Length: 421
Image 1 (cartoon, rainbow, N blue to C red):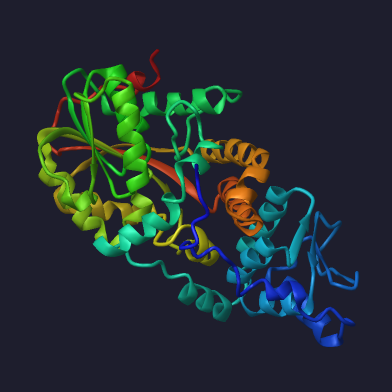
Image 2 (cartoon, rainbow, N blue to C red):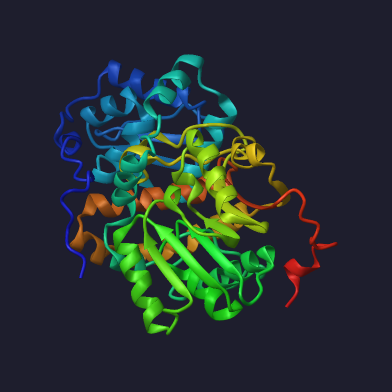
């Protein structure tokens, strides 16, 4: 049973006062602030409804969303730093979004991206959004914050097949989440051209579903590294239940400490936690552990243009996270002359995955609020909905990069192996 983890910085105690702040009469200064917020966001078709019911609108055409601001204090906090404060104010109920949350966020993201917003505002946002470092100690703290909050929490809304907290693959659009996650694992396995007896090392294994799938379906041996204690405990128990003790080994350690020699390197959803300064070191680990004919795949959230993670996500949900561009990711491969064989972008597959997660998560509102609190539920709801919007609007991408040694000529002549039965 999950218990409330008071060590997690999601208490929002410093924000709750915005609910009780002065409501009073709306002043000319309040109206100016509200209009300025909308102008800085390039006039999205969104109405701000102030605490006395007055509506402020600076958009063009018919409004598609409404945000209720519960108090003057909430408005002032929002104006101080919309990137950081919107999420906190939403979490405690000082802001309410009326209507479809995902559609609202898509509208705002598109407006801000297309409209710019001024050098000073962008510069201030960048200074406040710098990710926490992913040193050996820092990575442990960052992973604990996001992943060690109870396996039962994630089991509420992740797939029941393999507990995959990464993008699924939907070759058929109407697939269930479970079927799409299984299809993702097979898609990765085909890209790696797994064969019985291969030795596989996985960096960042989550709850261990990929390792179990590879071992049981493809006859390989997998050693998987992860620094989340709760995930390692869960993964080890599941492997034992499935009789895979001799084929799968879960190691509670950092990817930088990988030892041994392997035919295959795979990492699905871990690069976001590495940090660009550590990419050459990751490449060195891969170079050290792969055989002369070794091959690998890295699956990661990414961007088309270098940009820090959203400040509120970094602060409250995903500390230390950074989604790289393909150019930045090349710092892993170029120093060691790895050849890139294939790059695929599954952006819309991740939007669909997140939509499935959000739907399941919302079904369990009562459980989450009971075990954590209401603000925790609303914060995670915003995080999941915002992630859907980030992928549908193209703010985020999902890259799968396949690579091999430069002198390996044992390569497929077509892509037929990727889509075979």
